[in-house]
Length: 323
Ligand code: PMV
Image 1 (cartoon, rainbow, N blue to C red):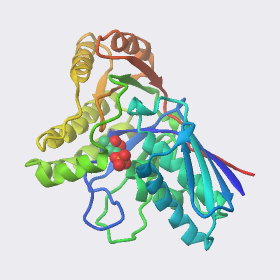
Image 2 (image 1 turned 30 degrees about the vertical axis):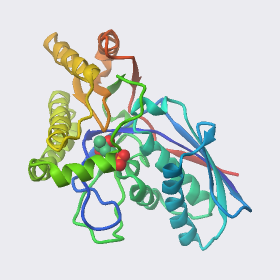
Image 3 (image 1 turned 120 degrees about the horizontal axis):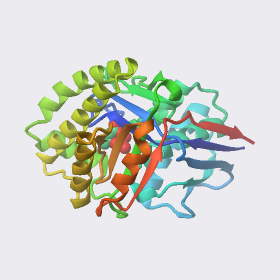
Image 4 (image 1 turned 60 degrees about the vertical axis):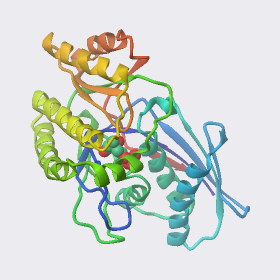
């Protein structure tokens, strides 16, 4: 049995940062994302006769940590399907993995979908999203296209918590201009950054209070197609998350990041729609209206600290083929 799944990364408009105490990887705050078109992870899963799982990433054998995280997900699928078989997984991104483009989101969404189908589980998208969430909460959101939310209700261990679609990809004509500021892999993985923030940031409680409000207002602005308000809230979410993390010594920005952020402010002063957001890395993603995307990309790409830019539209849900 073999399955091939293709999933797309997503960028959070409202950030998830922090985990609940209950075991099972539940987010401490709700998040809202846009799935990106034109960028994809392709994952092939083949059931084999061997006695262990094999993982090939980008043409080479995976590192020990990545393999362990994949095996954890595969073990859940084996348990649900009653199979003891192992698999050979081959996964590739058609975008640079070090680009900070949430490759774990598309990676775990593709793995969850492909593994569920390869083992014959006829789970719906919500169940697969819940499976992906246990490996990477942002991956739960990559199970759907367009605009997607992941709520953060008080969790008990094992509670079912999938992401949910909020609006389709063609709901609003916006773009995400991804500005790459380094080719180096990120220094602090998101889980480690979140744990350190919760433990050490004097602002963590303030973040936990503010994030649900920013999320509700952001979702309302999206549904009202109020792009200026949406952009303002997208920046609020990202700056609040990073300020909170920075107070714990978790710093993701580099010099190029600051240069890019200043360019975004300058673009706005010049009358363009441009709002910045950042994840657990130094890259800056700029939310803009489709009609400004080309001008925004040209200005951002001309910044000395920006290596290159990728312009992405709202993208589709993942697909899977079983053969
Ligand atoms: O799902 P993880 O563990 O890759 O964490 C994602 C964290 C952020 O990208 C910073 C925010 C988000 O909501 O995607």
